Length: 103
Image (cartoon, rainbow, N blue to C red; front, side, top):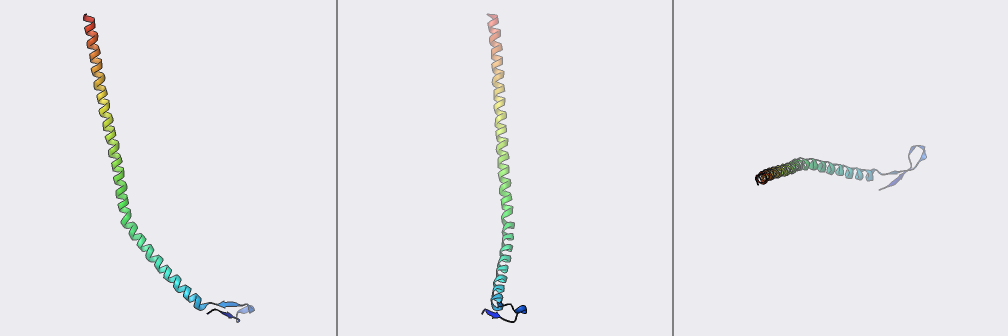
């Protein structure tokens, strides 16, 4: 129980809170224990989850690289088709010029 303590130096009044302080100290100690346990649990979860996230991140990067390489391959194939078409057009135009020159 809270009591006024009249025996303080200088004649000041103060509350005697020793039972309340003891109770608060127990609660604080319990909270510190809970916090420590939660901190340790968080560390364990980070060690479990972080590698999985790194793997997922690496897989996403690899997918992006594969997609990029596929697009580059498609682009090279299209360029090659364009070169073949241009070559055929040039050859056909040379043939037409040669045929028209003979006529």
